[in-house]
Amino acid sequence: MSKVLFGFTLGLIAGLLIAPDKGSESRKKLERAGRDLKINSMILLTTSTTNGNHLNQMLLTWRQKQRLKQELTPTRQALHGRAHDINTALFQKAFTMVDAFLFLLQKR
Image (cartoon, rainbow, N blue to C red):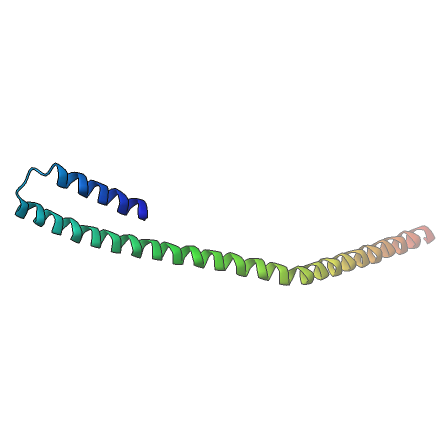
């Protein structure tokens, strides 16, 4: 923002030094340039504020996701461990049933 203002000021001074118009015309141009600068700076501030708010929302959302991830990690690990235990128990029962079935087939 300060670079834009510096560039505008430098251009304004250079324009005054080599001004081809009368003083009254130059003042009108300066008034218009001042109004344009005011409008452009308001647009720039509004845009940067809007973008800043959007960026802030994205950052907040990211932080919320990270916090939830940290909070849910122990639960996720516990569920994963429990699922592994259940899977192991099911395989053991299935092997027991297969052994029993094979034992019954041999007895016949």
